[in-house]
Length: 258
Image (cartoon, rainbow, N blue to C red; front, side, top):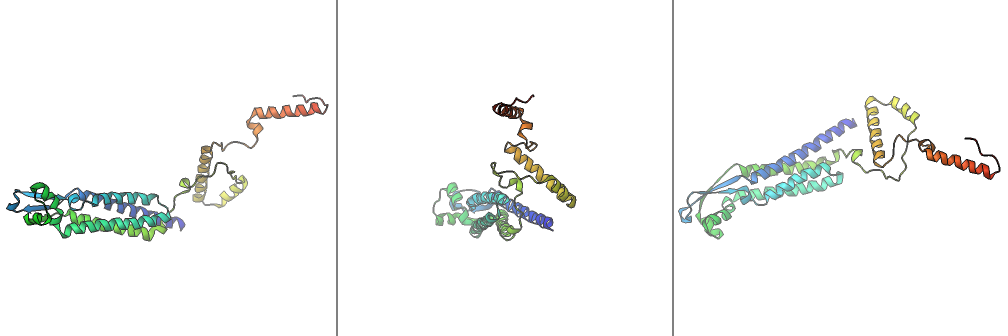
């Protein structure tokens, strides 16, 4: 049951992250596309039409969409408390994108003021609006608006489901202090416990033991080392023999024959 719940939480987590990243990437793509085609009057002195890109119509959405991609990446690494903080930030980002796109859709002529000024030399809001005969919209403003809404829904889903997301595994948890003693379980008790465990639990225990061995190696300890220093270090054994001989001579006895 616990394994099933963990798998469900993991699916929810990565689905939310994927949706947030894809929505942000779609907004970024929309910012590079043409949103409006402006038709100018003869009084403008400019023949033909002018195009307004998403970056001109809503300059803030490019930076906001990049922040949305970073938001999705941060969710993948965040702990439980930080997930709620990031979810709130994601909602703010999405609301900013929606507001910028909606403003551009409400007044297309205002989005092209800078473009018209550069092309015709006409300055001033009233003067520019006077030479704009009309504006044709593409589908990209609507795409950006929908993507912003989807990003908001993903951030809300993150806030609602964050408590169900699985936590990081022990491999990425805090490492044990090198000065702390390593607890060794009794092998006979472990063998008895292994007989009572299921095959999946036995595999999990073996995997944890392998991780512990790697942790010991990273601290410079040999997990196969014995507890007898004389057995591993011949010099230590020789030192013990010399000490025993010195004790025998001090007591007036004869030194032991090696």
